[in-house]
Image 1 (cartoon, one colour):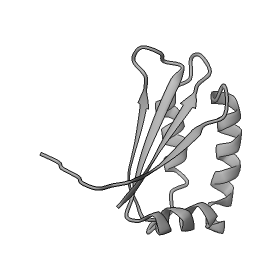
Image 2 (cartoon, helix red, strand yellow):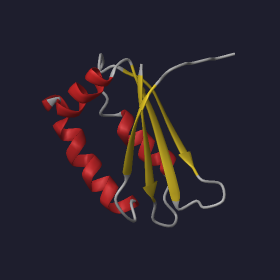
Image 3 (cartoon, one colour):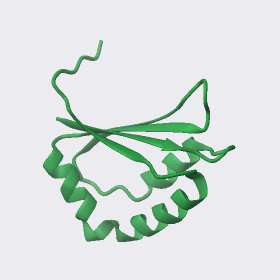
Length: 101
């Protein structure tokens, strides 16, 4: 299992849940994506986080390059230019343990 944490400065008033809804429309079956969690900092709502969990890093990288996602990439680029106040930071994570009660 592999995860990526994206930290992003948001423009004031950004509706991160609405951005998540747009992203969902472009997801392809079989991409390896297990879960995506969108979060906003309680103390600073101008900072957002997205935690994506994949079956493997290989599948995540293949997903990035999938030509079927080109329409989604274009729409995502437009959306990001509206909601981001600066460049996002991508943190790659190896999942070493998982627990769900």
